Amino acid sequence: MIPVLVLNAGSSSLKYQLIDMDDRSVTASGLVERIGEDAGRLEHRTPDTEPLVEEGKIPDHGAALDRVLAAFERTGGLAEAPFVVGHRVVHGGDRFSGPTVVDDDVLAEIRDLVPLAPLHNPANIAGIEVARSRFPDTPQVAVFDTAFHASMPPRAWRYALPRALADRLQVRRYGFHGASHAYVARQAAEHLGRPLAELDLVTLHLGNGASATAVAGGRSVDTSMGLTPLGGLVMGTRSGDLDPGIIAHLHREGGLDLDEIDGVLNKESGLKGLAGSNDLREVHRRADAGDADAVEALEVFCYRIRCTVGAYAAALGRLDAVVFTAGIGENDADVRARVCGGLAVLGVRLDEARNAARSREVRTISSDDSAVAVLVVPTDEELEIAEQSLAVVRANG
Image 1 (cartoon, rainbow, N blue to C red):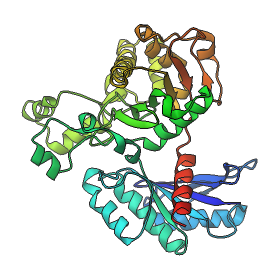
Image 2 (image 1 turned 30 degrees about the vertical axis):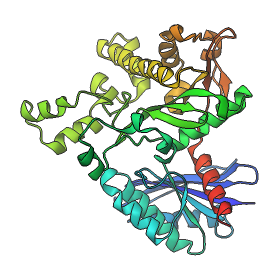
Image 3 (image 1 turned 60 degrees about the vertical axis):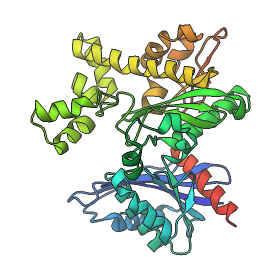
Protein backbone atom coordinates (compact mmCIF):
# COMPACT_ATOMS: atom_id res chain seq x y z
CA MET A 1 0.00 0.00 0.00
CA ILE A 2 1.22 3.48 -0.91
CA PRO A 3 -1.02 5.79 1.14
CA VAL A 4 -1.31 9.39 -0.07
CA LEU A 5 -3.35 11.79 2.04
CA VAL A 6 -4.93 14.63 0.06
CA LEU A 7 -6.03 17.73 1.99
CA ASN A 8 -8.17 20.60 0.73
CA ALA A 9 -8.38 23.19 3.49
CA GLY A 10 -11.01 25.92 3.32
CA SER A 11 -11.44 28.85 5.67
CA SER A 12 -13.80 26.83 7.90
CA SER A 13 -13.51 23.34 6.46
CA LEU A 14 -11.09 20.50 5.82
CA LYS A 15 -11.86 18.00 3.07
CA TYR A 16 -9.67 14.92 2.81
CA GLN A 17 -9.12 11.63 1.03
CA LEU A 18 -6.74 8.78 1.73
CA ILE A 19 -5.86 7.08 -1.54
CA ASP A 20 -3.95 3.80 -1.95
CA MET A 21 -1.84 4.56 -5.00
CA ASP A 22 -1.16 0.86 -5.62
CA ASP A 23 -4.64 0.54 -7.13
CA ARG A 24 -5.88 4.18 -7.04
CA SER A 25 -8.61 3.26 -4.55
CA VAL A 26 -10.04 5.59 -1.92
CA THR A 27 -9.64 3.90 1.46
CA ALA A 28 -11.20 6.75 3.45
CA SER A 29 -12.56 10.24 2.88
CA GLY A 30 -14.38 12.89 4.80
CA LEU A 31 -15.15 16.48 5.59
CA VAL A 32 -14.74 18.61 8.69
CA GLU A 33 -17.13 21.57 8.62
CA ARG A 34 -17.73 24.72 10.65
CA ILE A 35 -14.18 24.91 12.00
CA GLY A 36 -13.93 27.77 14.49
CA GLU A 37 -17.69 27.81 15.14
CA ASP A 38 -19.62 26.48 18.12
CA ALA A 39 -21.09 23.48 16.30
CA GLY A 40 -18.38 21.75 14.27
CA ARG A 41 -19.01 18.51 12.42
CA LEU A 42 -16.87 15.63 11.14
CA GLU A 43 -18.14 13.03 8.69
CA HIS A 44 -15.62 10.25 8.03
CA ARG A 45 -16.37 7.60 5.39
CA THR A 46 -14.79 4.26 4.57
CA PRO A 47 -15.90 1.81 1.88
CA ASP A 48 -18.86 -0.42 2.75
CA THR A 49 -19.42 1.02 6.23
CA GLU A 50 -21.76 3.59 7.71
CA PRO A 51 -20.22 7.08 7.99
CA LEU A 52 -18.69 8.07 11.31
CA VAL A 53 -20.26 11.38 12.34
CA GLU A 54 -19.07 13.51 15.24
CA GLU A 55 -20.29 16.94 16.32
CA GLY A 56 -18.85 19.48 18.70
CA LYS A 57 -16.65 22.54 18.76
CA ILE A 58 -13.56 22.31 16.55
CA PRO A 59 -11.54 25.44 17.29
CA ASP A 60 -9.00 25.39 14.45
CA HIS A 61 -7.50 23.35 11.61
CA GLY A 62 -5.06 21.64 13.98
CA ALA A 63 -7.93 20.32 16.05
CA ALA A 64 -9.72 19.34 12.83
CA LEU A 65 -6.82 17.19 11.63
CA ASP A 66 -6.50 15.65 15.10
CA ARG A 67 -10.18 14.63 14.82
CA VAL A 68 -9.48 13.13 11.41
CA LEU A 69 -6.50 11.14 12.70
CA ALA A 70 -8.58 9.89 15.65
CA ALA A 71 -11.23 8.76 13.16
CA PHE A 72 -8.57 6.81 11.28
CA GLU A 73 -7.53 5.14 14.55
CA ARG A 74 -11.13 4.05 15.15
CA THR A 75 -11.87 2.85 11.62
CA GLY A 76 -8.45 1.80 10.28
CA GLY A 77 -6.93 2.71 6.97
CA LEU A 78 -3.92 4.71 8.21
CA ALA A 79 -1.74 2.59 10.44
CA GLU A 80 1.25 4.93 10.12
CA ALA A 81 2.16 8.22 8.51
CA PRO A 82 1.18 8.57 4.83
CA PHE A 83 3.83 8.27 2.15
CA VAL A 84 3.11 11.86 1.10
CA VAL A 85 0.53 14.55 1.87
CA GLY A 86 -0.78 16.44 -1.15
CA HIS A 87 -2.36 19.86 -0.64
CA ARG A 88 -4.64 21.74 -2.96
CA VAL A 89 -3.40 25.35 -3.11
CA VAL A 90 -5.58 27.71 -5.08
CA HIS A 91 -3.09 30.34 -6.26
CA GLY A 92 0.50 29.78 -7.31
CA GLY A 93 0.86 33.08 -9.16
CA ASP A 94 3.53 32.99 -11.85
CA ARG A 95 6.03 31.37 -9.46
CA PHE A 96 4.77 27.78 -9.48
CA SER A 97 4.20 25.93 -12.74
CA GLY A 98 3.91 22.42 -11.28
CA PRO A 99 3.56 20.44 -8.05
CA THR A 100 6.16 21.51 -5.51
CA VAL A 101 7.58 19.89 -2.40
CA VAL A 102 6.96 22.30 0.46
CA ASP A 103 9.80 23.63 2.57
CA ASP A 104 10.04 26.86 4.56
CA ASP A 105 10.96 28.91 1.49
CA VAL A 106 8.07 27.53 -0.59
CA LEU A 107 5.64 28.17 2.26
CA ALA A 108 6.88 31.77 2.48
CA GLU A 109 6.31 32.22 -1.26
CA ILE A 110 2.77 30.85 -0.98
CA ARG A 111 2.20 33.31 1.84
CA ASP A 112 3.47 36.14 -0.40
CA LEU A 113 0.71 35.23 -2.87
CA VAL A 114 -2.10 35.76 -0.35
CA PRO A 115 -3.06 39.16 -1.90
CA LEU A 116 -3.95 37.29 -5.10
CA ALA A 117 -6.23 34.82 -3.27
CA PRO A 118 -7.07 36.31 0.14
CA LEU A 119 -10.03 33.97 0.70
CA HIS A 120 -8.24 30.75 -0.27
CA ASN A 121 -4.46 30.76 0.20
CA PRO A 122 -4.54 31.50 3.97
CA ALA A 123 -6.67 28.39 4.55
CA ASN A 124 -4.43 26.33 2.27
CA ILE A 125 -1.42 27.53 4.27
CA ALA A 126 -3.13 26.53 7.51
CA GLY A 127 -3.65 23.02 6.15
CA ILE A 128 0.01 22.73 5.16
CA GLU A 129 1.28 24.00 8.51
CA VAL A 130 -0.92 21.60 10.46
CA ALA A 131 0.06 18.60 8.32
CA ARG A 132 3.75 19.46 8.62
CA SER A 133 3.44 19.56 12.40
CA ARG A 134 1.55 16.24 12.58
CA PHE A 135 3.72 14.45 10.00
CA PRO A 136 7.16 16.08 10.34
CA ASP A 137 8.99 13.35 8.40
CA THR A 138 6.44 13.09 5.58
CA PRO A 139 6.90 15.06 2.33
CA GLN A 140 4.27 17.74 1.84
CA VAL A 141 3.44 18.70 -1.74
CA ALA A 142 1.53 21.77 -2.93
CA VAL A 143 -0.52 21.24 -6.09
CA PHE A 144 -1.67 24.58 -7.46
CA ASP A 145 -4.99 25.27 -9.20
CA THR A 146 -3.17 27.72 -11.43
CA ALA A 147 -0.22 25.52 -12.42
CA PHE A 148 -1.84 23.74 -15.37
CA HIS A 149 -2.42 27.12 -16.99
CA ALA A 150 1.20 28.24 -16.71
CA SER A 151 1.66 27.05 -20.30
CA MET A 152 -0.61 29.79 -21.68
CA PRO A 153 1.13 32.15 -24.12
CA PRO A 154 1.24 35.88 -23.32
CA ARG A 155 -1.47 36.63 -25.90
CA ALA A 156 -3.86 34.64 -23.70
CA TRP A 157 -2.75 35.69 -20.23
CA ARG A 158 -1.85 39.36 -20.67
CA TYR A 159 -4.44 42.06 -20.03
CA ALA A 160 -4.25 45.31 -22.00
CA LEU A 161 -3.25 47.39 -18.99
CA PRO A 162 -0.18 49.61 -18.57
CA ARG A 163 2.61 47.04 -18.64
CA ALA A 164 4.62 48.38 -15.69
CA LEU A 165 1.53 48.61 -13.46
CA ALA A 166 0.30 45.12 -14.38
CA ASP A 167 3.74 43.59 -13.87
CA ARG A 168 4.24 45.29 -10.50
CA LEU A 169 0.90 44.09 -9.16
CA GLN A 170 1.07 40.67 -10.90
CA VAL A 171 -2.15 41.39 -12.79
CA ARG A 172 -2.64 38.75 -15.49
CA ARG A 173 -4.84 35.78 -16.32
CA TYR A 174 -3.91 32.79 -14.15
CA GLY A 175 -6.85 30.41 -14.46
CA PHE A 176 -8.10 27.85 -11.94
CA HIS A 177 -9.55 24.33 -11.69
CA GLY A 178 -6.22 23.21 -13.15
CA ALA A 179 -6.20 19.75 -11.55
CA SER A 180 -9.65 19.03 -12.94
CA HIS A 181 -8.89 20.24 -16.46
CA ALA A 182 -5.63 18.25 -16.53
CA TYR A 183 -7.31 15.08 -15.26
CA VAL A 184 -10.27 15.10 -17.65
CA ALA A 185 -8.07 15.94 -20.65
CA ARG A 186 -5.99 12.82 -19.98
CA GLN A 187 -9.07 10.70 -19.43
CA ALA A 188 -10.63 11.99 -22.64
CA ALA A 189 -7.55 11.00 -24.65
CA GLU A 190 -7.58 7.53 -23.11
CA HIS A 191 -11.29 7.12 -23.89
CA LEU A 192 -10.79 8.23 -27.49
CA GLY A 193 -7.80 5.93 -27.87
CA ARG A 194 -5.60 8.75 -29.14
CA PRO A 195 -2.41 10.36 -27.79
CA LEU A 196 -3.19 13.47 -25.78
CA ALA A 197 -0.36 15.23 -27.63
CA GLU A 198 -2.41 14.99 -30.84
CA LEU A 199 -5.70 16.31 -29.47
CA ASP A 200 -7.29 19.77 -29.34
CA LEU A 201 -9.95 19.88 -26.64
CA VAL A 202 -12.25 22.30 -24.87
CA THR A 203 -12.79 21.13 -21.30
CA LEU A 204 -15.79 22.51 -19.38
CA HIS A 205 -15.66 22.30 -15.58
CA LEU A 206 -19.25 23.25 -14.73
CA GLY A 207 -20.21 23.43 -11.08
CA ASN A 208 -21.05 26.20 -8.63
CA GLY A 209 -17.72 27.51 -9.87
CA ALA A 210 -17.32 27.11 -13.62
CA SER A 211 -14.47 27.45 -16.09
CA ALA A 212 -13.52 26.48 -19.62
CA THR A 213 -10.05 25.65 -20.95
CA ALA A 214 -8.62 25.28 -24.43
CA VAL A 215 -6.21 22.33 -24.31
CA ALA A 216 -3.79 21.82 -27.20
CA GLY A 217 -1.70 18.67 -27.01
CA GLY A 218 -2.26 18.36 -23.28
CA ARG A 219 -1.29 21.97 -22.54
CA SER A 220 -3.59 24.80 -21.49
CA VAL A 221 -3.44 27.58 -24.09
CA ASP A 222 -6.37 29.66 -22.81
CA THR A 223 -8.84 29.57 -19.95
CA SER A 224 -11.85 31.57 -18.85
CA MET A 225 -11.02 32.48 -15.25
CA GLY A 226 -8.56 35.30 -14.83
CA LEU A 227 -6.62 37.02 -12.05
CA THR A 228 -9.21 35.53 -9.68
CA PRO A 229 -11.89 32.82 -9.96
CA LEU A 230 -14.46 35.57 -10.61
CA GLY A 231 -13.89 35.90 -14.35
CA GLY A 232 -15.25 33.97 -17.29
CA LEU A 233 -18.46 31.93 -17.32
CA VAL A 234 -21.61 32.67 -15.34
CA MET A 235 -21.43 30.70 -12.06
CA GLY A 236 -23.57 29.91 -9.05
CA THR A 237 -23.02 33.20 -7.23
CA ARG A 238 -20.25 34.79 -9.33
CA SER A 239 -20.94 37.14 -12.22
CA GLY A 240 -18.29 35.94 -14.63
CA ASP A 241 -17.07 38.42 -17.25
CA LEU A 242 -18.61 41.88 -17.33
CA ASP A 243 -17.75 45.38 -18.51
CA PRO A 244 -15.13 46.72 -16.04
CA GLY A 245 -16.92 50.07 -16.17
CA ILE A 246 -19.78 48.48 -14.23
CA ILE A 247 -17.62 48.58 -11.10
CA ALA A 248 -17.20 52.35 -11.30
CA HIS A 249 -20.89 52.71 -12.16
CA LEU A 250 -21.97 50.68 -9.11
CA HIS A 251 -19.77 52.91 -6.96
CA ARG A 252 -20.76 56.29 -8.43
CA GLU A 253 -24.45 55.70 -9.11
CA GLY A 254 -25.24 52.88 -6.66
CA GLY A 255 -23.25 54.20 -3.72
CA LEU A 256 -21.54 50.85 -3.13
CA ASP A 257 -18.01 50.83 -1.75
CA LEU A 258 -15.38 48.40 -3.05
CA ASP A 259 -16.04 45.75 -0.41
CA GLU A 260 -19.76 45.85 -1.16
CA ILE A 261 -19.12 45.57 -4.90
CA ASP A 262 -16.79 42.64 -4.30
CA GLY A 263 -19.51 40.96 -2.26
CA VAL A 264 -22.14 41.54 -4.95
CA LEU A 265 -19.97 40.15 -7.75
CA ASN A 266 -18.76 37.10 -5.80
CA LYS A 267 -21.72 36.17 -3.60
CA GLU A 268 -24.92 37.70 -5.00
CA SER A 269 -24.54 37.44 -8.76
CA GLY A 270 -24.48 34.59 -11.29
CA LEU A 271 -27.48 32.24 -11.20
CA LYS A 272 -28.38 33.50 -7.74
CA GLY A 273 -28.57 37.06 -9.00
CA LEU A 274 -30.48 36.14 -12.16
CA ALA A 275 -32.89 33.53 -10.79
CA GLY A 276 -32.78 33.75 -7.00
CA SER A 277 -30.90 30.48 -6.47
CA ASN A 278 -27.35 29.27 -7.10
CA ASP A 279 -28.58 25.64 -7.24
CA LEU A 280 -29.14 24.85 -10.92
CA ARG A 281 -31.60 22.09 -10.00
CA GLU A 282 -33.78 24.72 -8.34
CA VAL A 283 -33.38 27.00 -11.36
CA HIS A 284 -34.62 24.16 -13.57
CA ARG A 285 -37.62 23.61 -11.27
CA ARG A 286 -38.52 27.28 -11.38
CA ALA A 287 -38.09 27.43 -15.16
CA ASP A 288 -40.32 24.37 -15.61
CA ALA A 289 -42.94 26.11 -13.47
CA GLY A 290 -42.90 29.11 -15.79
CA ASP A 291 -40.61 31.49 -13.89
CA ALA A 292 -39.38 33.88 -16.60
CA ASP A 293 -36.29 34.88 -14.63
CA ALA A 294 -35.24 31.25 -14.28
CA VAL A 295 -35.84 30.61 -17.99
CA GLU A 296 -33.62 33.56 -18.85
CA ALA A 297 -30.95 32.52 -16.34
CA LEU A 298 -30.63 29.12 -18.03
CA GLU A 299 -30.35 30.78 -21.41
CA VAL A 300 -27.64 33.17 -20.21
CA PHE A 301 -25.70 30.41 -18.43
CA CYS A 302 -25.64 28.09 -21.47
CA TYR A 303 -25.16 30.86 -24.03
CA ARG A 304 -21.97 32.06 -22.37
CA ILE A 305 -20.59 28.52 -22.31
CA ARG A 306 -21.48 27.99 -25.97
CA CYS A 307 -19.80 31.25 -27.01
CA THR A 308 -16.67 30.31 -25.09
CA VAL A 309 -16.47 26.91 -26.82
CA GLY A 310 -16.71 28.67 -30.19
CA ALA A 311 -14.02 31.16 -29.24
CA TYR A 312 -11.68 28.43 -28.07
CA ALA A 313 -12.26 26.40 -31.22
CA ALA A 314 -11.01 29.45 -33.10
CA ALA A 315 -8.05 29.81 -30.74
CA LEU A 316 -7.11 26.15 -31.21
CA GLY A 317 -7.56 26.22 -34.98
CA ARG A 318 -9.50 22.95 -34.87
CA LEU A 319 -11.54 21.00 -32.35
CA ASP A 320 -11.43 17.26 -31.66
CA ALA A 321 -13.65 17.07 -28.59
CA VAL A 322 -15.73 19.00 -26.07
CA VAL A 323 -15.47 17.54 -22.57
CA PHE A 324 -18.09 18.15 -19.86
CA THR A 325 -17.18 17.57 -16.21
CA ALA A 326 -17.97 18.53 -12.57
CA GLY A 327 -21.40 18.54 -10.94
CA ILE A 328 -23.40 20.26 -13.66
CA GLY A 329 -21.32 19.05 -16.56
CA GLU A 330 -21.56 15.41 -15.47
CA ASN A 331 -25.22 15.35 -14.44
CA ASP A 332 -27.25 17.98 -16.33
CA ALA A 333 -28.26 16.62 -19.73
CA ASP A 334 -30.36 19.71 -20.46
CA VAL A 335 -27.39 22.06 -20.05
CA ARG A 336 -25.24 19.84 -22.28
CA ALA A 337 -27.98 19.84 -24.94
CA ARG A 338 -28.41 23.62 -24.77
CA VAL A 339 -24.65 24.20 -25.09
CA CYS A 340 -24.17 21.75 -27.96
CA GLY A 341 -27.35 22.79 -29.74
CA GLY A 342 -25.66 25.96 -30.99
CA LEU A 343 -22.42 24.27 -32.03
CA ALA A 344 -23.63 22.58 -35.23
CA VAL A 345 -21.53 25.08 -37.17
CA LEU A 346 -18.46 23.32 -35.70
CA GLY A 347 -19.78 19.90 -36.67
CA VAL A 348 -21.08 19.01 -33.22
CA ARG A 349 -23.99 16.56 -33.24
CA LEU A 350 -25.39 15.28 -29.98
CA ASP A 351 -27.06 11.88 -29.62
CA GLU A 352 -30.16 12.55 -27.51
CA ALA A 353 -30.38 9.05 -26.04
CA ARG A 354 -26.68 8.94 -25.12
CA ASN A 355 -26.92 12.38 -23.58
CA ALA A 356 -29.97 11.46 -21.49
CA ALA A 357 -28.45 8.23 -20.13
CA ARG A 358 -26.99 8.55 -16.63
CA SER A 359 -23.66 6.95 -15.79
CA ARG A 360 -20.60 7.47 -13.61
CA GLU A 361 -18.36 6.23 -16.41
CA VAL A 362 -16.47 8.16 -19.07
CA ARG A 363 -18.75 8.19 -22.10
CA THR A 364 -19.35 9.62 -25.55
CA ILE A 365 -22.66 11.47 -25.95
CA SER A 366 -22.19 12.72 -29.52
CA SER A 367 -23.62 10.89 -32.52
CA ASP A 368 -21.47 8.58 -34.61
CA ASP A 369 -21.44 11.11 -37.47
CA SER A 370 -20.40 14.06 -35.29
CA ALA A 371 -17.23 15.76 -36.56
CA VAL A 372 -16.40 16.68 -32.96
CA ALA A 373 -16.63 14.16 -30.12
CA VAL A 374 -18.64 15.25 -27.09
CA LEU A 375 -17.67 13.46 -23.88
CA VAL A 376 -18.75 13.35 -20.27
CA VAL A 377 -15.76 12.66 -18.01
CA PRO A 378 -16.27 12.49 -14.24
CA THR A 379 -13.52 14.52 -12.65
CA ASP A 380 -11.35 13.40 -9.74
CA GLU A 381 -9.30 16.33 -8.50
CA GLU A 382 -8.17 14.46 -5.39
CA LEU A 383 -6.73 11.60 -7.44
CA GLU A 384 -5.00 14.11 -9.72
CA ILE A 385 -3.46 15.82 -6.67
CA ALA A 386 -2.35 12.43 -5.34
CA GLU A 387 -0.85 11.46 -8.71
CA GLN A 388 1.08 14.71 -9.01
CA SER A 389 2.23 14.62 -5.39
CA LEU A 390 3.54 11.07 -5.66
CA ALA A 391 5.26 11.80 -8.97
CA VAL A 392 7.14 14.85 -7.72
CA VAL A 393 8.29 13.07 -4.54
CA ARG A 394 9.56 10.12 -6.56
CA ALA A 395 11.26 12.46 -9.01
CA ASN A 396 13.05 14.09 -6.10
CA GLY A 397 14.21 10.71 -4.82
